[in-house]
Image 1 (tube, rainbow, N blue to C red):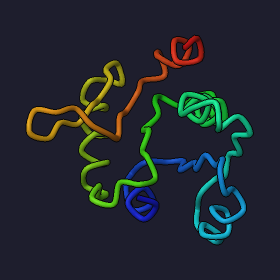
Image 2 (cartoon, helix red, strand yellow; image 1 turned 180 degrees about the vertical axis):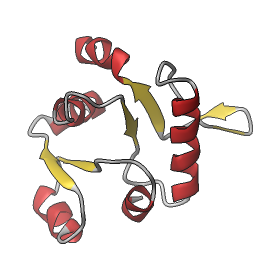
Image 3 (tube, one colour; image 1 turned 90 degrees about the horizontal axis):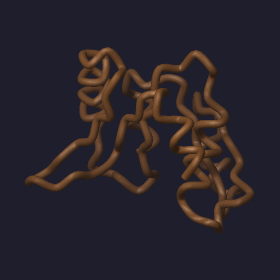
Image 4 (cartoon, rainbow, N blue to C red; image 1 turned 30 degrees about the vertical axis):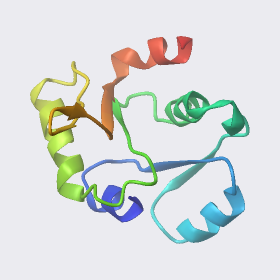
Length: 119
């Protein structure tokens, strides 16, 4: 997933770490990513989502949430989500589907951030 994110139009690229933080940071050394530590990672995925969103620049229009274990997701998939998001003027949640099933990654508009933090 890391090479897909970096090869896509998504910027900035943040990586939220938790379990095995030193190993993850070592694996990403030298890449154009910002590491965001989540000391509360054991409390669940939502804590990582909140940590990542909290580290975004304030003027950001949305966040593309991609899991680290999605090797079949290519830069073109991410760019397609970004293009759809821009076409919707940043006002819609973009969710990919495959064979009628929703999946990841998901692109959330900034207008949803307050609700995400309330979860």
